[in-house]
Image 1 (cartoon, rainbow, N blue to C red):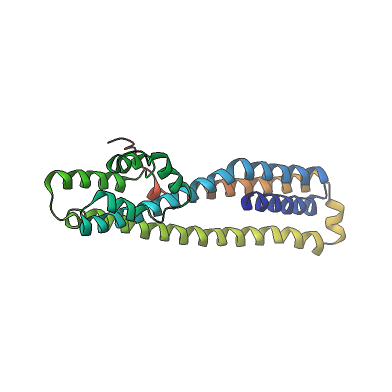
Image 2: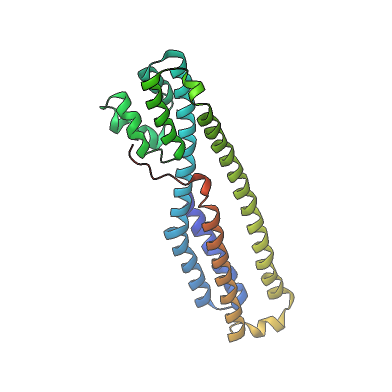
Length: 236
């Protein structure tokens, strides 16, 4: 809901700036509608997908670490699974409800369809090896634990980069659009005479098209992080 509200607000703001720049209500309306449709149909979906992926990766990291630690202490799949899922929430909790009728090991295997990451596939392989050969599961999973922690650190880094780039993007385009406002009111009567002229309408349209393209490229780049790409091991 917050994304929709933000999209409506930004679309109306850009539409208003389009009117200030061109003096044409039709152009302003077209700008507002285009950004509103783009935001609701595309940007909203990309942001939600990215948020879901980040959350799933964090849940995967917690699940693996908690499971391995509990397994090393109690050597029980049931206890380890309970400890690893006791604080589950949101989509993960709902997923667990759907598979609670399965045996513990079957639930663990099934979660490979929810945690679609290479580290979870590695985790399943280590569990299988541990069941067949025994030993110290923490020693066997040392490399996996390092990789899981590396993924968590990478997520933190990605979030920091995205936040910084968002600020840079907003500042850059705020300055650019601010120039339009300055020209509109700073040039006074001269700019007033240009309003609704073909040249001003073309320049305004081109500027907002360029803004849309820049926004699209930025979203595609930062909402598709290769660090969080899922694997294709849906079955084992």
